Image (cartoon, rainbow, N blue to C red; front, top):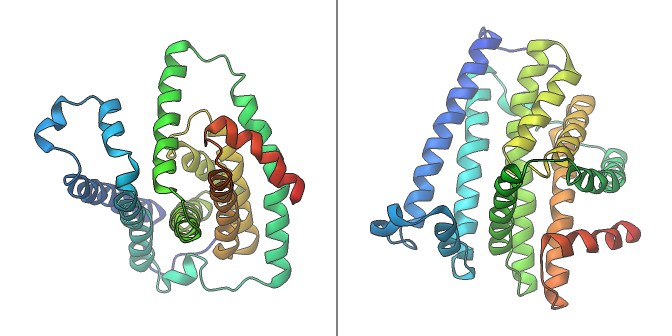
Length: 285
């Protein structure tokens, strides 16, 4: 649903405020990450390390708790705080504007769960379809490196040798990520674009493209775009951001749960093994 601004600020002005706050959040988050990593990386050697060596030194199990804290702080500073401050500046009731006040109904909650489960096979098929696109070798090397770095980070942050660590991973990777990302992308960016362009579907598509791009998983761009579109459509149709958060959480939680189950079974966790295990969960659903 398109909201009207409750303060006399043009849409261009609102976009400038939100964009400026996001850029500021990125800078502060980068500083926080640098300070946090300074205890694990010898700063004197930092300039001598290439990116692969740097990531290998950082992404080790010993740094799991540190990376969890940095992940939380980074997403809080980059996504949630800039969007909330923007809504506070531009609208008299920021939480109403962001869609965080209206409570979902039980039928809506059930429907969202079914929608997410119905989307999983489509997302999986699109993941395979992306691999068939004839990218150049140089492009594939860049894409694969980004995929590998992303997966290494997930493996370390999602390190789960006990049920307690599984619950912690659900909170850090699934729940908090879902809340912070949905506040920014759907409550902030899509909300603003929808009111500005007066074309909700276009706004949903633009936001979904941005959502997919910033994850840095270029081989998975199309599947994440579809996921972003579904999340955006849920928010547009209901004006309840909690439904988008729930759908996002379920998607993330399924991945975390697969990692935990495979760890307990003693199976190696790789992108390929995750994909091979995926149909089992779909069958159970």
